[in-house]
Length: 326
Image (cartoon, rainbow, N blue to C red; front, side, top):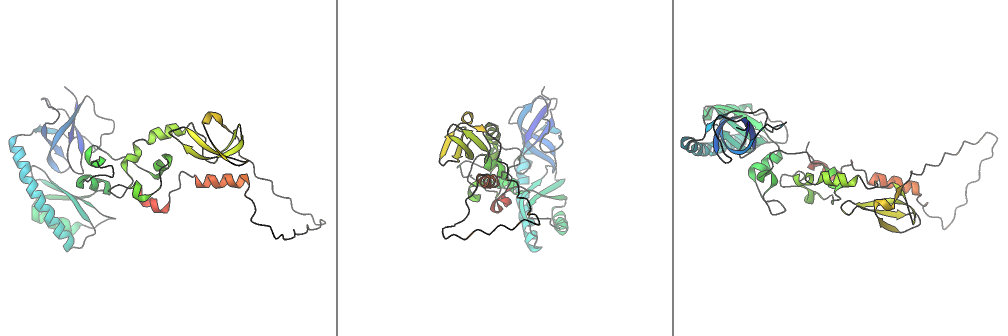
């Protein structure tokens, strides 16, 4: 008999791991299980020989029994009660002018506890709201703040690709997503293109990031000096998938080459500073102004430093900073 059952739920709490009971369960069976909101009902999502190293949802809860027809009827009745509790809670939120948005309501099968999930910009003093809910429901009430990603998972929608949101369809846990992932994939840093329905960076940016990071290891870095058969130059661009780099030659022109066709060379050292004049040394005359004198030409060293600053992978544009998770 397998040792672990993965029980899946809908809403913000997607899954939890429970020790396998001493009777047979199959994938898709409805079970009554201990949860954070009391006795809940879920579906057997997988039967595993061992528990994962870091199971999402915290410590494992025990499966009480396989769901019966009475449990299913009780669950349907509680669904209506949850709708009424949601309406009452929203009314009290507006009456008390609380800066929060109610997302999900869960009531256990034994009605011993009710869990209210909400989103908010910061901390909210909801002590008076808890008193209102406790008096109305006549049960223990707990409010828990969740993130905007969990909110999108609960509400559900269609993504820009036309498919249901990944968090709603199959993601069981959220992984960190950063602007660095978009930069490594050479994506346009456009907030409207990179943000999902939740207002944060799209989860799909992390799907292929490990591949891009592995392929990028074999390419010369942006701004580094290289030697080619056509002469020395500086790397100005990378095509990770095609495994090529764009090199600007010091003699002029650009070439697209493979890593085997370039050799990384040390960066030019800055020129040493001129020594101070001695006391007996006459000052040098200032150069006469020329009518055709324009702005000084940029040296290769300055050009290289400018490329390094522009290609800083850790720099986050101000208009994209709010897309990353706090």
